[in-house]
Image (cartoon, rainbow, N blue to C red):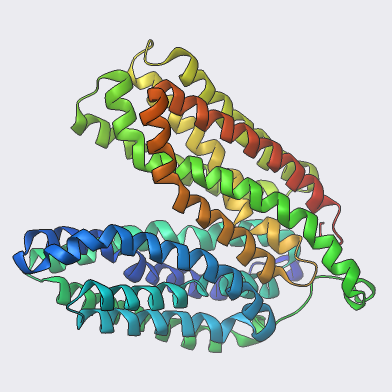
Length: 411
């Protein structure tokens, strides 16, 4: 039987799961608003501005995570998480009153800045309430809330549109959803307060007393994890955006079939993410093989596609991309969870915010970066570039796991 001290704080994790799922009322609303504005004669200017507004929001979101980690370590994650949901709710309500792209962009920036505090806050709460040896399992459980949140929010907003709702109704629904999420989190975390959640260090007193040693111990793994995450996110987001076009060009698939086939990739990623956390909790050696080996596997799959192209048919390419998704999901899940929390040297949320924030910068670079490679070198060149980037990510993954094992917080 698992000892009491090794048990997962299930009520706290359930509250965090629901709360973070509600974040997608803000993060997923633009995909619903875009066709509504495009279909409206009065929304043409807004429709043209949405791509730039979305890119600006992602950039603010990435930078905000870095600041959010520092704030979570300083003030604790409980209040900060509630503030993030409330701020995003206010931004959605204000956006429903906007009639120009400029004011809508200001609301979007405010909302994404507020929401960027959410994930570092979640990491801080989990690290303070969960035994170190179970961090991987806990963070993987909470991180899967994005699947539920994204799918549920899109379904709810689609129902609003089906019932005749316009942009204002969509934004009002998101306002309510975020407000409900804030209420659930505030009540739930208040009820589970005795189970942890205050800022605390995972280090021994001797190390905590030496600030220079703490900074030095977290700097190297932070740099390696940030480089790994940027590379992996760049490849994942590039494939997420361009897989249908790559399949059409490389395998001459019909566009509709290519779009349906691309839906397999997030499902494959979910499988890899679920395996990563429990495997990482099995010890330092398992942590290495949960980061380096899957990333290397994904890189080799991409390089194989670059070498053989579509000679073996579309399903060979789809299988290779699915294998890549499974492989990349493992180190990416760990980079956004257990790795920075274990290597945080008493500042786990700071580490988490920096690593996850730099990964989001990779998403900013993904679309335009691969588009330029495609234009210059074609589909095979694009796969070669992705494979080379993934190979660098595998090397960074090896360095990251090695650096984490050498920190005082590693098990």
